[in-house]
Length: 121
Image 1 (cartoon, rainbow, N blue to C red):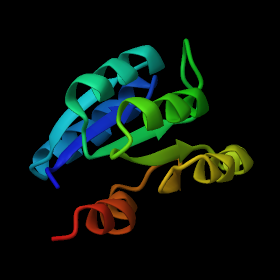
Image 2 (image 1 turned 45 degrees about the vertical axis):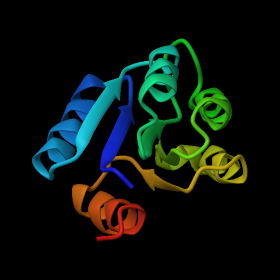
Image 3 (image 1 turned 90 degrees about the vertical axis):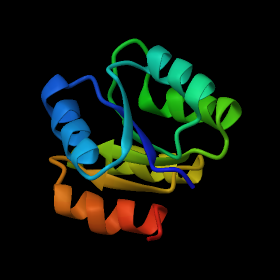
Image 4 (image 1 turned 180 degrees about the vertical axis):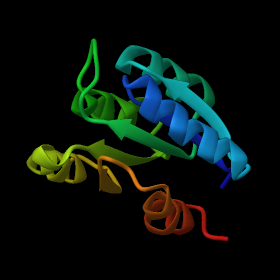
């Protein structure tokens, strides 16, 4: 499995922190602030992992998740959600997401709970 990650979050600050961290760790990183652009990247590049915020502009994270299963079924999807969205995050798991992380994201949790499990070293 290649070490490519698509980060989808409409909050530029959060997205930039995650993108910078992943790049420093040697991952090939794609990024998007909205659902339609994320789906374009998925269809074109088929990243190994997508970190997907539930709350997006133009299209919900759940809608992106559903469509991602069609355009890039092998991409592992991890949901990023606020604590108040735990029910929606669990729904995303039922729809095929691998796991979810609560915001604010801890980069250490991202590494140990997601990256180290998805990209077995």
